[in-house]
Length: 408
Image (cartoon, rainbow, N blue to C red; front, side):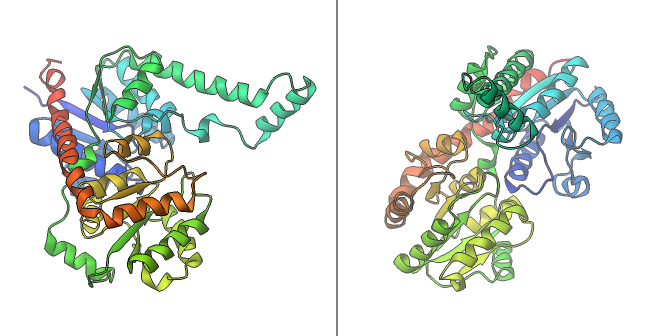
C-alpha cells in the first residue's frame, strides 16, 4: 500500500517567525511519530534548511508567494497529495483570504483537508479589513461629505469587508474534513461565522517543543555573552506588527525592573529583523542600556525556549514568546494584539495589561511586581495547567486517525 501523502501549509513558514517554526517543528515530529508511514511535505520559503532540520520533503511557499512558476508547482503538489493540513497559527483571522484559497483548491481536487490547531482572534486582521489611508479611504470620506454625513461610508465598507471574509470562512470550512482549534474561543469565533461542522479543541502545538540540551544551551549562553550571575533576568518581546505606541513606557518599565529588582533585561525578537529594529529603539530610550542584551540573528525555536528556561519574567506582545516561556512555567505578562493573548493568559488566571495601543505603566508594573515577588506561587499554579495543555496537544495526531487510515 502506497504511503499517504500529507501537505502541511497555509502558514508563512520560513519567513523569520520563530512562533510559526515552533508550530511546524512539533506538528511534523508528532505526526511522523504516530504515523511513520505517512510522507510529509512542507510548503516553506526555506526549503533546504527545513528538510535538513525536520527530515521532510519541501516545496515552495504556496499562497504567500504569487510567482507564476509557484502557482503551477502548487497545482501539481495539491494534485499529488492525499491530505492538506493547514498547520496552526492564527491564520483564520490574520490571513484567511490566503489559506481559504488553498483549502478550496484542495477540496476542488477531491483532497481531504484538516485545520490543525488553528487560532482565530475576535477581530479580523485590521491590515486587510480596516481603511486608514489611501485612495479608497479618501473617496469614501468624500462620499460621506456629499451625503451630509448621514452614513459613515468608511465604517460601512469595513463592515462589508468583514462580512465578506466571514461568509467565505463559513462557505469554505463547512466542507472540510476536520477542524481542530487551539482554544475554545477560536472555536466560538468560527461558530459565530456560521461554521456548523463539529470542532475539536486542544491547545497550541508549540507547547510540546523540546528545548535544546543543557550543554548546548551553555554554548548559546556564551555566544550571546548573557550574564552568568545570580541576578534575575526579565525578558521583553515586543512585536513590530501593530507596534506598541508607547515605546518610551516600555523603556521606562525595563529601567524600573533594573532599579527595583536588580534585574538584567533580555530582549528577544521573535522576528530577528523587524522585531529587532523595534527593540533597538527601546534600548536607545533606556537609562540602563548597559544592563540590556538583545538576541540578534535568526534563532531556532528550541534555542529560544531553552534560553527562556533560565529567566524570571517575560513581558510580551508576541503570543509564542509567552507560550515558549510557559513550557517552563515562567511568569508571563501580556500586551494584547488581539484576543489570542488574552485567551492564553486566561488559562493561567491572568489577563492582559492592556493592548499595544492602550496600556498604562502602572498596570504593567503592578503585574511585574506581583509576579516577580510571587514566582514560586505562580509556577506551582502554572505547571499543572501546562501539563494539561500539553496532554491535549498530544491528542492531535490521533484525531487524524480516521483520515489517515481511510482508503484513498
